Each structure stands twice: as C-alpha cells, then as structure tokens.
Length: 418
Image 1 (cartoon, rainbow, N blue to C red):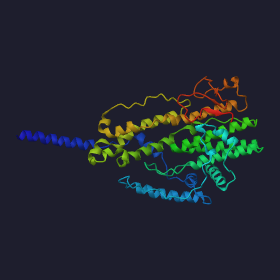
Image 2: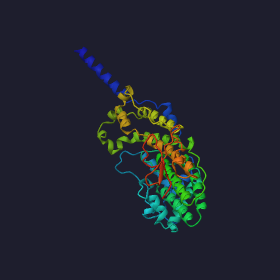
Image 3: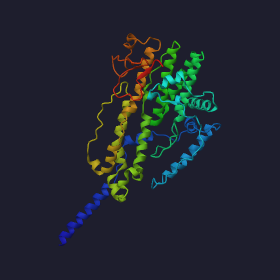
Image 4: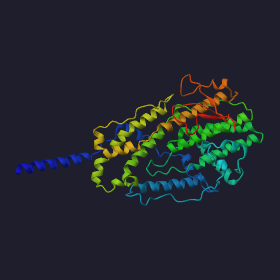
C-alpha cells in the first residue's frame, strides 16, 4: 500500500512539474528582439502631429489639434496597459471636422465606372470653396514636412489617425491640375504634378505602418495617371519618372511596426470577444497553451522573409512559408493555433509597390510616343527579363502589363485617355 502511495505521489509531483514547465515561456529570439527594437515612436515628427490634425474643422490649426490628439493618445496608451476587458474601451474625444461633402468626383479610380473621365469632364467639386482650399493646402503641407514617423505606440488598439484627408487632399490636387490645364496652363499643371510626385515618393519611403504605406501608394498611382492623361490630352512633352528604389519599396519599417502590433495582440488576445471561448479557462490553463514569446519566435521568420522579398530587384512570391509541427508547438498549442489562423499574407502588399514600378515603366515608354504596337512592344516588364507584354485595353483608355499576382488596384495599368 505504501508503495502504491509513493507511486501516486511521484506521479502527482511529476504532473505538477510538467504543468509548471508548460507554463514557462521562452525568451524572445535575437531576431525578434532586433525587429522590435527598430520601432521608434518617441522621436519627434511634425508630419505625424500635423497628420493627426488634418481633419480639424475649418479655421482650426491642424498642428495644434494634432498636438491635442497626440496627448490624448498618450493617455489612452497608459489606460490600455491596465485593461482587463474590452467591454468599456476608452476612446478619443469627438471633434468637429472639415466638411467636404459627398461629391461624385471623390470617386475611387480603383472602381472604374468612368471615375477618371468624371475628373476631366464634369467634376462637381467647388475647388474655390474655403473647405476645399483648406483641404488641398493641408495635404500639400503634410507633403512638405519630410519627417513622417508614426508616434502612436504599436498596439492592438492603436490610433493611427484618419487618412481620408490624404485621399481627398490628393484628389483636390489632381482636380486643380486638371483645371489649370483646361484653363490654358497645361505646362504649369504638369510641373505641379511632377513636384507632387517627388514629395509623394518621399512620403512613401517614410511611412512605417501598413495603412499609411498603402494609402500613399493610392495617391502616387493617381498622380501618375492624371499626369499621363494631361500630357496626352494637351500634347505635352514630358520627362521620365525614376522607378521606386529599394529604399522606397522596402517594407522593413512597416513590418517591424506590424510585428510589434502582433506582439501587443498576443498580450491582449484573451480580452477579445473573438477568443471568448478561452476566457472561462483558469489563467494557469491558458498559460499552458499560450506562450507569447514562442509564438513571436515562430512568427518572426515570416516577417523577415517578407522584408527580404520587398527588397528584391525582381521579387519572388513563391516561397514556402509552411510551418512544421515541433515540440514548441506542443507547448504552445493555443499560440500556434492563433499563429496559423491569423498569420497575414503579406505578398499582396509587397506587390503593390512593384506594380507601381510597372506603371512607371509604362509611363516612361509612352510619355513622348504614340500608343501603337511598336511602342507597346518596346516596353519591358520590370517583373521579368525580356518580357514585353504591354497591351491596350478594348476601350483604348489604359495600357496594362502582367505580373505574378493579381492586380486588384490597377497599379500595373496606365491611363492614356479619359
């Protein structure tokens, strides 16, 4: 009997040791630490502060409003550190905003349906209204800073600020250029757009969040299309645009921010209603299955590989990102499930920048040439060696090229007519 008790006691002790061991997380890998340490939200950035205030009401100073918003964000970040539930989340104060109206000319070029033609033919936006003048000036002011850096802490509940002011401000810049060209000053319109392109690509290189990078791509894409059509409609001689460089295409800073965002998400995952199935579990059981550091160590190669692809001359999107089951996954069964379920496909975001270089290649090949078979056959696709696949659309309004992934945003196409 005593022997049986000793065996049971030994098994119980072993079970306790195993349970305690299963609750122990690993240290972050050197690669994960290095990626996290690259994120800096403390250095000053006038551009980001101004960005936070760009949607302020007419007559307000965007910089002063941005400073107020940033101060609130800092207070919220401190509050988030002590959250125990998402039931009552603190939020930013509501403010009066610049009212620009719901005009048809604020259409999306991505949606097609004659949006570009609408800008050239029958824009319904009153460009000289105080609101439109203010919105355009604010966007150009943002471009002028040259020190854009996200100052909000990468967090599951991070406040990036709104980006509609970027999109509408850029649309007003496009409409102003079109109005200038139609008023007899196409050369000035062209010069203004070339200048804006230079400022936009500087902003692209400085954006360090995925949303800011993708929004900046939208504006760059639109400016090239509008510039192309103005040159063709008014028979202007143009100069070539330099392709986006490795520094401008790299998603290193962007994905470092996203990785830190993922780290925060793991820390708060049990507060999220999406994972309420685990909220009733005892903490010690949850810790057995969820190891944030192990999960991040599994995730970091995915991000580093994506960074490498974003810095290639000709990117490859066919890499194998399969995760093998190992002992760490058994210790981290809940974390591995989250990793597998939530691991983002970063390739489409990487491709958008390279797709813009296809648009630039089309612009450079067509800017001072007729759109004919000979010209189209001379434009090399930047994605491939010795591939000349430019084709004119059936309505003769766009020239497009192929690529390794779907081009949902039309970045591999250049507008050549309204």
